[in-house]
Every structure is written in C-alpha cells, then in structure tokens.
Length: 445
Picture 1 (cartoon, rainbow, N blue to C red):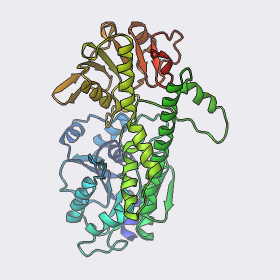
Picture 2 (cartoon, rainbow, N blue to C red):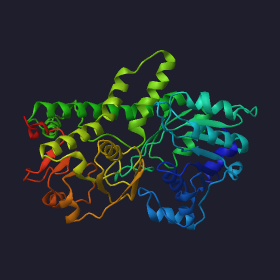
Picture 3 (cartoon, helix red, strand yellow):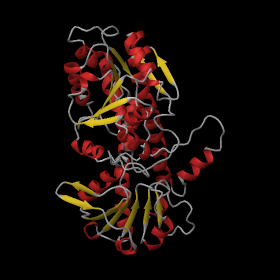
Picture 4 (spheres, rainbow, N blue to C red):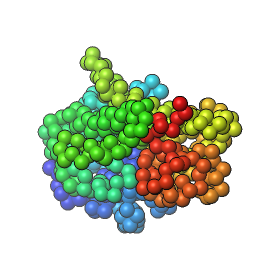
C-alpha cells in the first residue's frame, strides 16, 4: 500500500467518495463524515441530490443529527456529476444490482461507475466494491477496466470487495456496529481496504480473495432464502392438512435450545438481496456446469407466495358468495418489510397486480410510508385508514405488519381479515381472521 495513502487514512485526510447514495451508500457516507473524513457522494438520481442539498434525510436508518452534522460542517457534499472523482483517494461503489426479466444479473450500474472511475481516478487510489454481485465481478469485470490505463493493481491502485450488510429498519445493528468482510485482489489491496474499513466497522474479517467475499454475501442471503422457503412450504402444507397452525408449530420448535433457528412464513419476500441473490449465484454456477437446484427451487418457492395469497383472497370471496368483479379489497402494508420506507420488490405490490388481473379492480391500500402505486393503466392512491375504509372492504389483507397499526381496531371494523404475518396473534376473538399457515379449516368442504 502507498505510504502516502496509508498516512492519509491514519490522519483522516483521505478524501472519500461514495457512488450510489441509497440504503447502503448514504449511511456509509454519513458514517465516514461524522468520523471526520471529507466525503463526496455521487448519485445519478437528481431527486436524492436535491434532498441532500435541502438538508433532508431520506433514509430512516440514518440518524438525522449525524446527517445534519455532516452537511453543516461541510464534511459531506453530493452531486449527480462525476467531476470531482479525480480528487478522491478512496472510492466506494454502492450501486443497484438487479436482475432482468430473465433472472439474469444486471451489473450495468457497477460497470458504468467503473468506467467513470477509469476516466477520472488518480493514481494510488483505493476502489472498494460493496454492491452485491456474483463471484468474480471484482477481478473479472471491474479490474480489467481500471487496468486499461496500464496501471497495475496493488501497485498503481488498490481494489477490494467488501459486501454491504444493511438491514433496513434494524434497531440494533447499523453501519458502525456490524462486522464486515473484505477480500483484496492483492495483499496490499487487502491491507489498504482493511485500514479504511476498520474506521467505521466494529470488526473487519479478512478473506483470501474478492471471490470469497462475494460468495460470502450470497451465502448469507441464500441461507435466509432457503429457510424462508422451507417454512413457506410448511405453511402451505399446514393449510392443506387443516387445523394445524404453522405459527404454533414454529413457536414450539423454537423452544429447542440447539439445532433450530426460527424463520417465519409470509406473503413473499422483497427488498433487494434475498429475492435477487439466488439468481446471481445460479447464473454464475452455470459457467462451471453446475446447477444450483436447491437454491433455485427455494427462490421459486418464495416467489409463489404472492400467488398463494391471491388464492386465499379469491377463495375467501367465494366462501362469502362475492364475485371478484364486485369485490372490494383493502391491502394494509405495501413496503417490503415492517416499519421501513423501502418498497423494492414488495410482495404487496405483486399481490395487488395479481388481484387486478383477476378482475378485482376495486382495490384500496394503506401504508404509512407510501403514497401511490402505478400498475398498468391504473394509479392506486394511498387511502386514509379509518372505520369507513375498513367497513367498506369485503376483505382486509394484512401484508406488511407495521408496528403503527392497531390490529384489534382493524379486526373490529373489518368484515373479514386475511393475516399473512400473524400480526393478529394477540387477538382472542378470531372469528373474522384467516391466518396464512392455518387457513384450510375455513374453506368450504
């Protein structure tokens, strides 16, 4: 590692740039800024840049006083342009990595950011990729672009991968107290990245290569995907069997103090990582003539859950003698996770889409964190949650179990409730409640 860069890091004189100011990038940028570094953020979304310039914090997990401290003390600036990239010593890439409609990885944002770094970066800079991606991205995709100038990795610039570990809405773990993993292309790259990361992370765990770090990120999330798929399948079996409540079963199994970790069923998974990562691994595995059947099956099983909730709604309407084109359905909670503002890949939006396709056009929704949803030719506008809205609905579907909801009040004024999250578990009178994972006994014989 360059002694000049090393000294800059130790003295917090290194200039840091964060490309991508979303749920990963903004918390990272603010964390380095409050530690005393000069941080510059870049995001092509002009709305985010305007909000930062207006001193408006748009990520709930970022402590607002830290956000304002960073901006007011000129420790954090932001732009939609890359013109200051050449001044930076350390560059983090925190951009989106979705999949396309064919479930193929889309790393175009990573490559676009890399091209900008190649055009502008100065010698001896440090580049750390944090975006979730397939094993090999850092060395096989990013590194060749950065070496086009004739620079040598580990000598003229440093390159590493350190996966993001952001859990939106988590009240316990955040950027500063969550251990991180890092893999450098060379030993000097690893040394430089570790030195940078240990300033904002509680622990830095080194691995032998960027590929190992990239794979570790996929394993973390695929572990969750597989276990969620397992309980989702168990929930559907309990529904089929009748009079077996999956939530009771999980609670009982969780009393075992070893060899079991509780996961819970639901209407589907959302966000970025758990839904996307299995396809990144499956796609990459094919290069090695390997088919990750187990991983792919789990992902497919999770993606079936919104369809299952749709079926619950339709069968409950039939049970009540209500035609789909006459039905009034209310969806409660449309972000992908409770108490967060993030609606990426939300199962609630998929459920609305599926119900609409079935001819249920009278769909209302409420979510304290969202406004409008556009699907096809229709805009679904967020409604005020009141007694009339609940009474008018033939079925109220709890999809995201926000803490702000008064579930007893919701059940009291609803005709019938489909609960996909066990949010109503404390309510004793369950005559109106249909619970995912304990549904079959409500169906007509």
